[in-house]
Length: 318
Image (cartoon, rainbow, N blue to C red; front, side, top):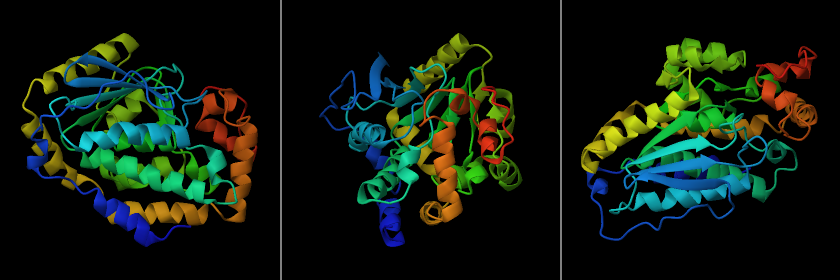
């Protein structure tokens, strides 16, 4: 277990830059088609817009390879250049999954240094989504995003969903918590009462419900309209000078939950998940999900998690 001091240091090191950070230098960021481990591919709808497409295994889970690739993409964006995108749109090549939960094998004992590093690097890239204020991050979601998937999307700047989107935090059903930003950001976005309702009951959020809660900016009933609508908005925003985008995101970042709350919650997650009942539930999750394959259990999240209590009917419909 790494200390809370280390977590706090990571959080503080990612504090938001000033408006001066938006001034571009003359050097450029090298464009590429695919990330080092192949979990991300990149396309460029315009000079100021980058589309990042997630493709990581059958359920797009958050593992070591994805984390390395996302850090590799985000870290250079801290140094603003003429080629730094003003807008980054995240989508998925998997029609069923936008972004999955954390690799559940990383929660099984023993908790090794490699597993600790995955947690520490998770904090790094989620904080970069907030501290890189010269770039606006948009989640274009038309598939499932449970656990870490929705926690990461919640820490992006804008979220738009299509008819295939289903999200939620199933961790409470395992005796865990949505400690990777889910509790703190869900509370900040939807309010305490609604956050408690959906987190404590591990309830699934569909498109219209998420739009009503304010978790999603807009729900599109048609997938093609989702893609077109997000691109149209991105193109409009990208017209404007970067310094204004940077200052607006910087100031509105003060509405984010306190970073120390995030750190305490993340530390609590790793303490709780080592308890005997929680470890047993992680094992049951891996068994029911057939080791995190795209079967009925993963497709049925979050209702399928009730299978831990013998209450799931085996349906893949959440």
